Length: 283
Ligand code: PAF
Image 1 (tube, helix red, strand yellow):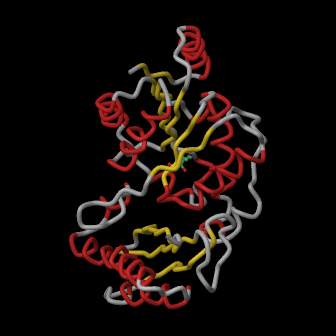
Image 2: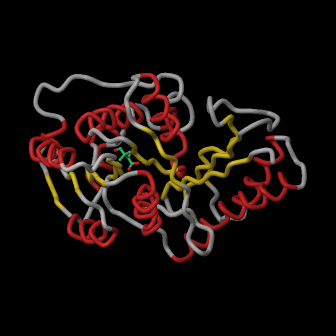
C-alpha cells in the first residue's frame, strides 16, 4: 500500500494509476480508529472497482464539541497495518493544514437532510461532514465511494450532495455490521464497561423485537418505537436521544410504515452515544 499525506503526491499517483489502465477507483473515507465495520466497507467496495483508496482524516469541522476532537485518538500505524492486510492500494492521510489551509472559507450544506436528528443535536456537524466529503471527492477523484448504513443520516446526506452537485461518484451503501452478540460495530464500543456492553445490547434487542413485530404485520410507527423504548428502559439509567421511524428518502418521521422506512435509534450508555438502525421494507 502506498501512503500519501499531500494532495500533490496523491494526484501524481492518481495520474499513474489512470495511465496504467486501472480504471475504476473506489474510495473509503474514514477518520481512523479502524474496526471490522470499516474493513467490511473496504471489502465490499472490492466488487465495485479496480483500485481502492482509503482516507484517514480526523475532520475538525464535524466536531461540534472541541473537547471531543481533542479526545479523538487514532493509532495511524495500526490502521495502516489493517488496511495493508485488507489489500487497500492507497492511503491518503493528510494533515489538517492540507485540507483546511489558512484562509479556507467555503462550506457545503445539505439543508433539509442535515436539519433533524443528529443535525438537531449536533449543530454544524453535517456541514463539516458535507464539506470534507466534497473536498475529499475533489482530491481523490473516485468513481465510487462507500458509506456505511450505520450512520444512515450521513449516508443519505452524501447521496443528496452527490446528486445535487452532479458529482460523478457512485455512492455504494455498506451494510451495518454487528458483533456476534448483535451490537452494531462502532469505535465507541471500546469505551463501554462490561456492564455497559450488556446494557448496550438492549438497543439491538429492541430493534430485533421491532423487526419481529413488523414481520407479524405491525405497521404503526409508535408501536414499533415503543418496543425499542421498552427494551432500552431495562437499563439502570436509560438515556434515549431519539427512537423514531422515518421515511428512508426524506428522513421525515412517519406514523404508518409504507414503502421503505427505517427505525433510527440513539441512546447513551456509560456516557457513550450509540447509534443503531433497522430497515423495514414491504416484501
Ligand atoms: O463517517 C466518518 O467516519 C466521517 O464522518 C467521514 C465520512 C469520514 C467524514 O469525515
